[in-house]
Amino acid sequence: MAAACSFRSIVRAPPPPRGLARRSVFCCSAAPGGVSTSKLVMEVKERLEREHPGLPTGRSGRDDDEMILWFLKDRKFAVDEAVSKLTKAIKWRQDFHVSELSEESVKGLFQTGKAYVHSSFDIYDRPVLVVVAAKHFPSKQDPLENEKLCAFLVEKALNKLPTGTDNILGIFDLRGFRVENGDLQFLKFLIDVFYYYYPKRLGQVLFVDAPFVFQPMWQLVKPLLKQYASLVRFCDAETVRKEYFTEETVPPDFRSPCLAAPAPMGLCLSVALWKDKVYADRRRRGHDDVVDDVTMMGGGVSDYGLPVGAGAFKAEEAVAPPTPSASGVLERAGGTPARPIWQRRVLMGVKCQLPRFSGMILYDERGRPVCGGVRDRARDQEKHAAAINILRDML
Image (cartoon, rainbow, N blue to C red; front, side):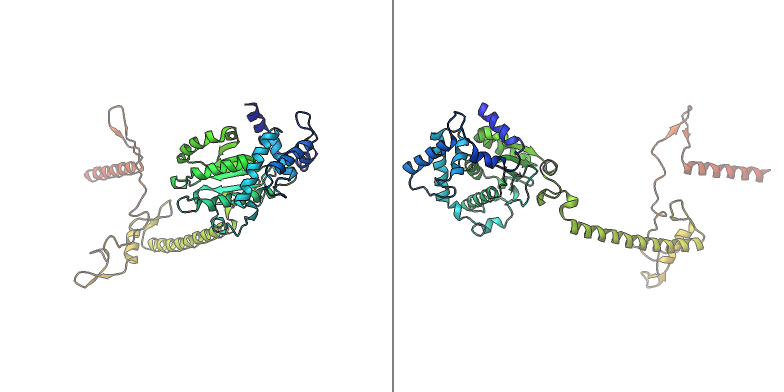
């Protein structure tokens, strides 16, 4: 538990200033037990040369001081454990031909965009490895090629480590993840990669917008991670943008919608505004023509700018051209409609008016309906005027 807590504090804390970590690798003079780290490195080198003379030398080989010291720190400066783990890592690199991997050798899967190393660092100066889970199809893609792509991208990210930074950030984009994208075998390989071959090189893992179907798979993988499960954080794309990147350095897949494609967005917006303006001008010109016709025919305009009154019907008749009837005779509206009702022009405000009834009916204390609408008051005024006229005629 103590080891897990100390490891978590190392990877969670912001990286030290540039140049400090690299100097600590080469200038650390003593291990926790008081033994010189240079002596421990020499002891590991001698044992590897004596016990495993067939291992390659050079960079990432059995005589690489930096690599040996890194594995010693990972194993708390226990020489036996460091030798065992280092031997396994170097043999894997040799058998997997890691040094020979290139973008050309993994071109087929690399072009799918399923995984890539981001061109910018996060706010802690860590290289960023992005995996798009929705583009991973284990049933259609060669597992060995997937593993080669993984090793190539990890090497590429580690080669970008700036001075003062020792680990990378892994982002798993789980948006659009489905059952066919799940691959437990590849996840096990990924765990081995970062536990045995690149220990403590993964500073943090972000699972972005994980859907519900991913939860059963996570429950299976979590026990395999052991204390490394504390490196995993479930979050959304907004958190990635705000807490790990700036607006200039955020990966393209996680940019906000308004910034994802500024040129196409601006073009679409301009076209939309232009179309709205054109349609508005057309509607205004057509509406003005109709209103002028209605006014000349004795109609009027409502408070909403819509033609009302008898003139509106006359305008409709004027707009509708004559058409032949069943007998071949042209007829206009007024008698037999010149056009079928479903083909006649509908003037807004004449046949389609907003409802004036609110849905509320009021009653007085005697249970009689209380007139509260505009149409009801107009009807009452008409009845009152009609009653006055009748009384006047009788007198």
